[in-house]
Amino acid sequence: MTTGPPPSGYPPPRQSSGASTVVKIALGICLGGFLLMVGCAALIVAGSEVGDGTETTSDEEGSRQRPAKIGDTLTLSSNEAGLKMKVKVLSVANPLDTGEFDTPTNPSNRFVGVTVALTNIGDVTYDDAPSNGATVITSGDEQGTSTIVSEGPCATGLDSAVKISPGSRRQGCIPFEVPKGRLKTFQFSLDSGFGPESGEWSLRGG
Image (cartoon, rainbow, N blue to C red; front, side, top):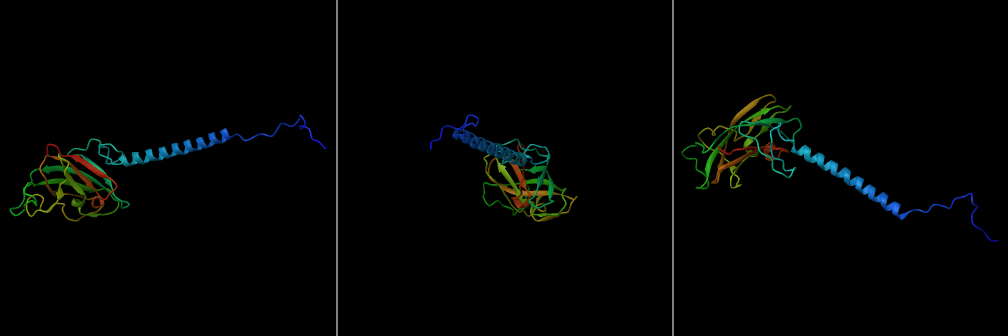
């Protein structure tokens, strides 16, 4: 028995197209890549929103913006839920007056002091040593180190642990030992320097 072509009323079966499958895969990859790019962009924007509107730096953004100035206030968050602080740089002492027996570890270094005001606008108590999260950078891109002095305006400052309850404010001087060079910037983070945000102030002219 022989069979002939199918009756004319029935269309031939459709064949799957390899090109169509490739197009579908490509569209899926493009869509996934687009969603991934959108997610990354949102992460960068969130990371760059440091402070309360004053321009600061953001490592996540990958570019350096203009730092805040002496007298500006920045708002910084903590890794601890509910902790948020307003930080204001009030003044800079360069050089810093110290006691007779306060000498730098390196004869070419000098002491400087940065006076800051910390205001707790969060819901939990701030309990930290501000000097642990503070850094001074010189014009030669060298980093100063926070220290302790026995006399002068920074002798009873913020170089040790302090507690600031919600709604309270504390101000004081943080002493540093810095190498030769003009002062460039002051950087501050919560959580002893491990906070998710870092504020930066220009010290040029200070």
